[in-house]
Figure 1 (cartoon, rainbow, N blue to C red):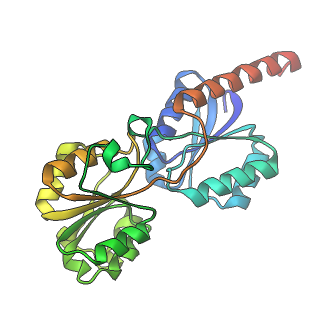
Figure 2: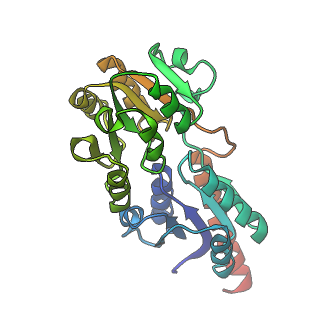
Length: 276
């Protein structure tokens, strides 16, 4: 790479894309790892950024960090990708490199926990701790359900009686997500493959189209379009079933950008002193 600053970004979110763009704009060479080819395609073409795709386990992360002499690892994976974040953090600890978690901004900086329904001004909202809890709650309801929690845990909704007729799944427009959804029994108009985040108008249109009484989603923060989902659910009179975001420590997008800049400056100073 042109400018080996030894930065590795694990992307897969809006924040990951913004950090990659920041690195490119400031002529910082870096590696960006995405789980899928689709994620990689979004980032391709950024000058000085080398994109790699494919899920890595902890050992593979350690090998990559060691072989490429990475000194700063930025975890900008999805807030709900808890296992992936743990693997990244552990790999960094073993390789003795700095790990930084980039946090997604919550609406009004209040997060989902602690009286969130009142904080967001929505009375008709149910807050649960997991997709499994959401599915369990929905088992005791009647009426159509619009599911926007992803394809990975879609199997949990098959426990709902008559799910093939009641449930409408909105998943990513990737072959993997679509194939898994079809395998589970979500077909025809009950399967919506689209790339978000979505506007309030689009969410509202889908709620009307599916005649959904329930809209189940994850508290994905501003970047994930959670506010637009709230707005649409209120307008449609639907119950919003929100899976609370896991609590975690980390840095804001702006703070991570500053750390990247500092890393670049330190590398330049080292290069000048060492004559590299």
